[in-house]
Length: 91
Length: 92
Image (cartoon, rainbow over all chains, first blue to last red; front, side, top):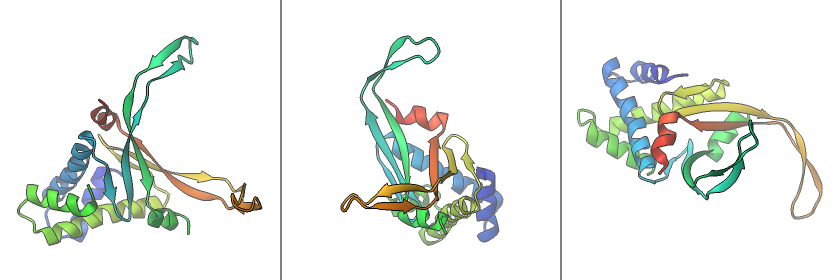
C-alpha cells in the first residue's frame, strides 16, 4: 500500500474530490512529521505510538574494515503498535 | 499529539472541511492502513516510513513469577522503519 492507495480509499468513502483527498492525506502526514520534528511524541489511538528516543554516543565498528568509530548521540524514531492493532493482526 | 489534536490541526489548515468530517476522514486513513496490514500487505509512505508485518516463531518462555515453562504461539508483529526524510528531520 502506498500513499496513492490511501488517497483512493478516502476518495471512495467520502464525497470529496481526489485532489481534495490527496491534500488531506498529505497534510495528515506532514503534521505528524512536524510534531515529531519538534520532539513531540505522536499517539494515534487504535493504531500506535510514535516515540522519539535520545541515544547516547557509543563506540562502534565499521563492519567492513573493523575500524573503531564513534557513533554520535542522536534522536531516533520508534513505533509501537497499539494493543488493539496487535490483537487484530493475530486473529 | 493525540489523534484528536491531529484532527484539530488538520481542520485548522484545511478550513473547507468541518472538523466532524475531518474526523471521519482521518479515521478512514488509519483504518485503511490497518486493513492493509491485516491482509499482510506492506505499507510505504514516501518521506515518512514503511510498516511491515513479520512472523515470529512459536517459542518457549517462562512465567516470570512462577518460573513455569509456557509455550508462546507464533505471532505477527508490526515493524516500522522511518524513511530517510523523517529520520533526518527528527535527529538533531
